[in-house]
Length: 231
View 1 (cartoon, helix red, strand yellow):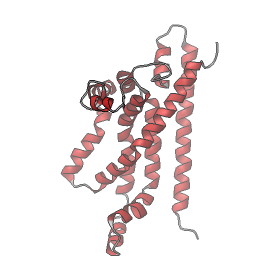
View 2 (cartoon, helix red, strand yellow):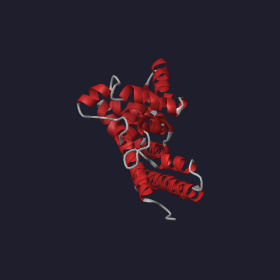
View 3 (cartoon, helix red, strand yellow):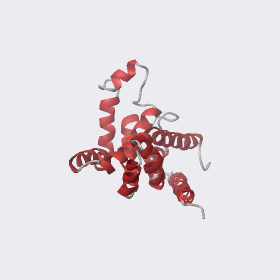
View 4 (cartoon, helix red, strand yellow):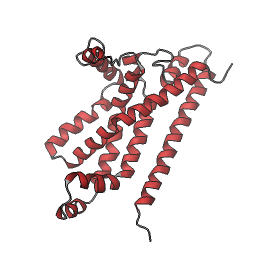
């Protein structure tokens, strides 16, 4: 028995592709949402935070079904996109969309906390010197919150890499198209005599997750080191 089959390797590659695409596409929105949460007044903040947190409290299967209803070929959004040649349901792009939705709250939280930790006097001083909002955001807020942004990226990537419930509901498990690593693990657990195969896939998943955490730690340290003034 081979340690990993061709379908396994395809599932691993697809999972990495889906996770990277999900994080890359939603990163600007996550940063802007975190900034809005860190600056919003109480009522607006509660509503926005509730909307951001919704994917975490809903069952993943329910989230996947809602995505299917909205972005399926017969859905109000998916129907319009289908006419433009953009299809999400039962495509790898749909897996990336499902992963992005599920990972979004975990990306936003550390970014928001990092932005909230910035002393208000920093922004007030820049405002006093006449710096416009975009300059303050890109030259002060974003660099100071960089460790939180890096942490959010890695958390989002790890979540997207392990996403299962919403993905299988929205796009199924088509080998070579939507069969991701978590789905491959689930299928292996349902097959008698595949215990060793399941364990190997789980170890691969653990290795990828540990690699993401180590990359986050190295990136965070590098960012902090660069931010420190040279003596």
